[in-house]
Length: 160
Image (cartoon, rainbow, N blue to C red; front, top):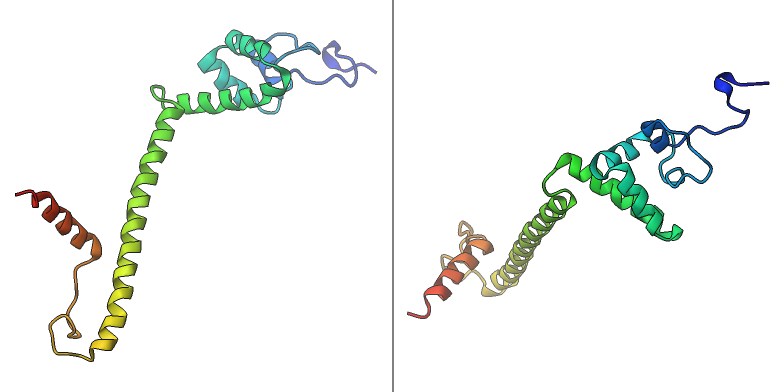
């Protein structure tokens, strides 16, 4: 029984690369293990950014056990370049590093405030309500990050 198009029975469909390039997909196609026909967007973005011949050269130069990782990296970089043509994944990495720095600073401030609050709790219990403004129920001390900013300004002027 023949299938339409003259293909033999049981033949697989061409890989996404050969489909996009409109060429015949051979058994020794370098693209077929990494760009399956059901994921055409992967090769399309890689082809648009790097070009099929460059991808072919890169894959041919690598040992087979490294090709999967190389393709994953190329797909990631190509998708990043589609979103940010100038910086690509470096822009994403830089943005994430800035977020980490910001969140680490916020975490340090929150931890310092917790320590400050813990230090105030035992001291108010042992003082016995000495009548000072700091011990009065309505007294509120500024958050620790405001205190640390004032302290750092004081240290900057310390050389005078």
